[in-house]
Figure 1: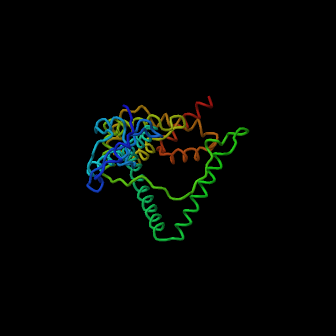
Figure 2 (figure 1 turned 135 degrees about the vertical axis):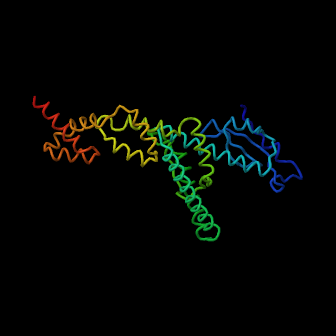
Figure 3 (figure 1 turned 90 degrees about the vertical axis):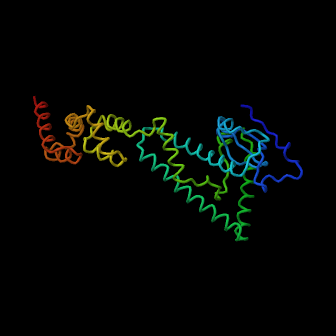
Length: 295
């Protein structure tokens, strides 16, 4: 896709005030700096939102396109959905997640944004109503710009380790991403479900077959952990019925690993019981392994 800029073409149209009339003109389409797969869209020479290249094509956006305020709001919502989905997708791909984990992740993000937006609104209100604070902020920004300008002019020939990484910050609040509701959360969950990333059965199978495979873990403990991750009992029972992991083999792993630490039989058995194994099974297997070692 060819990204073009033609802001001057629409800056001198007399008698037009698209924004006041509820219409906006696409004046520039520009590749995003951090993500080259996204395009920054400018309306009336002002940055409005970013979309993926495919979304720009699907929405038939081009320089000179005229859009209503309703469509602008819809495109902004599409933009925020796309960015939030990409962030969640990267997080979900790091390792298998249960549906509850994904829901909790999105809910935490939603609450964090609410707090950030509230704090930013308070900052803007204080900036508007407090002249002394406004002057202080202005001074901080000016001093920070001067410091960064000096860094740019510095000769880094002898030591350039910080040439591209060192810079000063104002540490003032910056505009956060907009709030999003639970409706958007549900859309992201459904989209992840379609690509197979929300599947509690598949997650449970992976978890059971890969959790503590070397040091050993009881079925009871696995069931408790899966319950904390929001997996229903019926799903857990179904997955365990097809699993080859048994408490007998898991106890043997733990005894081999912990017997030196717990030479006393009672302490060893107590430890195994605390890990979720049955007393009789733990005692019998401990005796069996001790007798084998003595032979």
